[in-house]
Image (cartoon, rainbow, N blue to C red; front, side, top):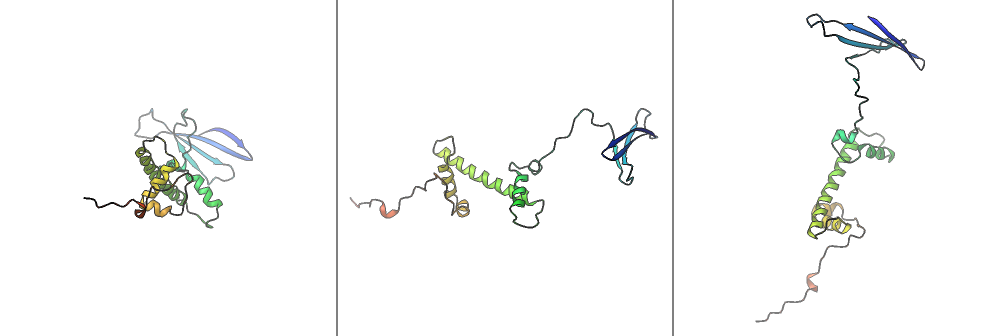
Length: 171
């Protein structure tokens, strides 16, 4: 056992002990290094880390909860809105993930149908008219968004049968 150094950090002294352990049965060139970090006040909290250190890799990048769930919609932001909205006193960790997944699915569905409507009208850009056509022509989306008015969306082209010119029976 060899005491490497004594560090002081904000009223806590952290003792870094380096212990090199040679295992029998391994070649002599293989050294297993263990770093034992413990505070001088509480010796019960021991953290054992083996190995080579960072090796010049730098700090590990943090992974967002959206990336963990495989979503494009912001899970953290939706969770914050759910907390700030006071919809419930308690909220599970999976609630914002589930809501973000549902919202992403609905947006993907509407955008796909609106893109098809834009392509049918020989346009390369989706405008509110295409979104209206997509929603009104789909039975389930029409039921979900029945009371929604889309600005500059217009209405479905529809002419009542009574208003059409009568067909004359000429022979």
